[in-house]
Image 1 (cartoon, rainbow, N blue to C red):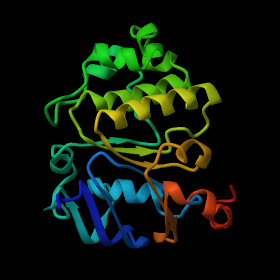
Image 2 (image 1 turned 60 degrees about the vertical axis):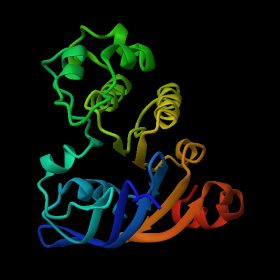
Image 3 (image 1 turned 135 degrees about the horizontal axis):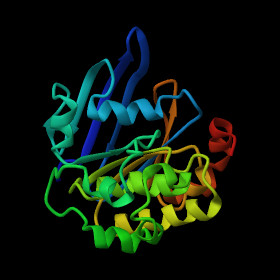
Length: 234
């Protein structure tokens, strides 16, 4: 059997003295899309940050395609083909849309061209000369997501990409993610919007108190909606 793209075993993580992850364990195969579902404070975003080492301390097992990366610095992990789209987006306000797109370094072969990205996100093409400060929240989110596609990363970590966005933008992001999955990207999404995540994912990991409380496959959704309602209030 091929190695999983991402495998996490009994991972603990801290911010200072705050112990946030309490034994997170899950894995993602090549080309899979999985979601981390849970309420605020459950540890979903910290799980994504822990993959890149963006926490103060980690303990446990973390492997990318079979390689132990727990001791690597964040920039070394990123160069193994990991793209992270943070909740705060991190758009450079003084740069234009296209300058933001062209800024990130390459971490692997096969990054999408600017033209391919504009085809996926027509709004960005229309606003390609606009500074970051002039973009709407939805356009900034599209740009934050599009920017990591230029790098050649094959594992995408998407943190709350639909939060506060209009339904039409959420729908456009969903279509883009479907295209990325069809291209073979491996995707881990932390998202509170269950209705957005449900039709996209191969598998859902319900996170509670810094660990996986339940695992729900796509074909189990109907039968397990009662349990999901208890955890998520959906």
